[in-house]
Length: 409
Image 1 (cartoon, rainbow, N blue to C red):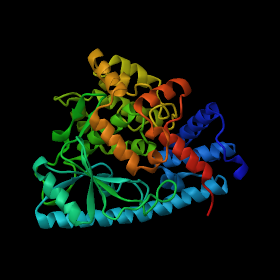
Image 2: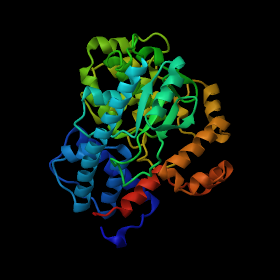
Image 3: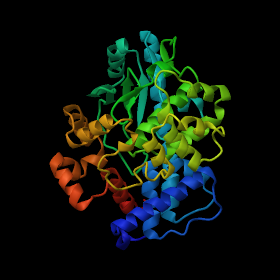
């Protein structure tokens, strides 16, 4: 894999390599194989990109029973070391937040990765975390923001979904994949919801700790954590950004739920859990044996027929950045009515001012977007270029380019 091999091949070969490597690595996560895959030079590079996009470097470093080329082995070992160092930083930050919140009498709740970290389901450093997500009561948003500013953070973006913060002393992202020194951003939420695909599904009341104490609080129970992980996975499937590490989260948590927990999920009265079928179907496909036997069949009746049909043919490739194709209307199959489908199409063709503001913020803060000429083009220009040239998705292309340039230091 020398420098004469660092050019991306034709698009069909790129798509084939991403699919083959993603599916093989997903299989390795569920059931490690004794023999290394027979990949060519570009496929090994594509596999590096897949590892970075799906956040599974440290996990594979511990799990694989074979060794690949030196470049591959070095990358996984580096991801394992960086993951452990980064987790130590995150744990220290969480301890500081907990102490400051206790002193202020302010209740906060760990969400997603921060809650999984507390449960210890993953080995040390195995589960990457770019952001810390915290839930706060609506009336406590300002005191919580002031608390984070006192810990050396500055306001980043105030959107309808959350208020984000970044370290007051800005630092560029380092390395390829996970790195201990990459900035740890914090997102404050006063509610938890996902647009599926346009109308929001809000589960805040179902996952909030009923009587929180000052400091950091856990979810009320494991079912609440599972419900949130499933909703977040559903949202990522809708936008085709699901990661294999998210399926690993579900695979580790699912066996720890009781039959009563699953029954409670199925009988949730307020808006149903039709959105849980797609991520659970992918979980069952890639990690068989994690779920109760009749769970998927019980969920199917509430799931829209078009979505039900779509997920029968789906795997993690189509639901993630491993699929490099830019979709015209991502998430259309999640629509539950013609009106909602039309709303999604309209939002895609004519993005709202809030959407454009959020995209500008992402471009300014995420290197994979900031370095791409695509993101700086007008919306009309993007539509025309997509129609004529069908470019690769920007984050996928960025990861591939970083993988092609990666060398053992």
